[in-house]
Image 1: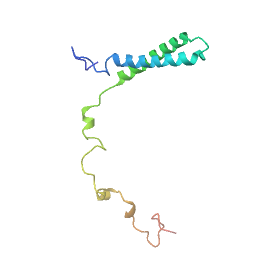
Image 2 (image 1 turned 90 degrees about the vertical axis):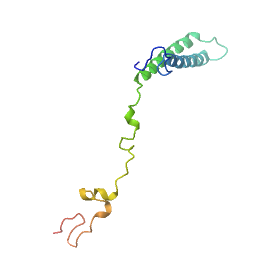
Image 3 (image 1 turned 180 degrees about the vertical axis):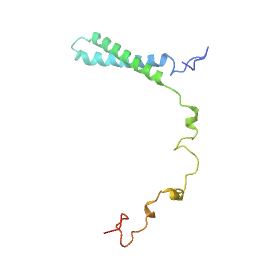
Image 4 (image 1 turned 60 degrees about the vertical axis):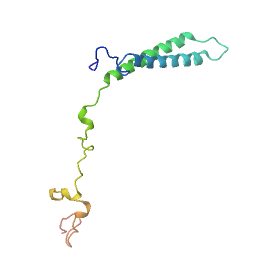
Length: 125
């Protein structure tokens, strides 16, 4: 609603025409499917009552779903595509040596235990 301009046609996503066409298509599919399968063969009369009921239900359900989805559509903020995120940054990655002075250790940085210590670093009694 916010991006409406006077005199300009709406986009298919924000206009009424898109969800109506989508719902009409599925209503026709439901009508044909129920007309074929509910009659039970060519020897019996076609069940138009069930076909129209199924088409109406399919039309209403798909129209409500399409309207809810189009109302929830929102453009992404402009800053999201600029590389300011954690994984989108174009800054160089820190070297593996950067974290060594801050209590971090790599798996190969541990020194071997002394002769009187257990592998966990506590002395044996």
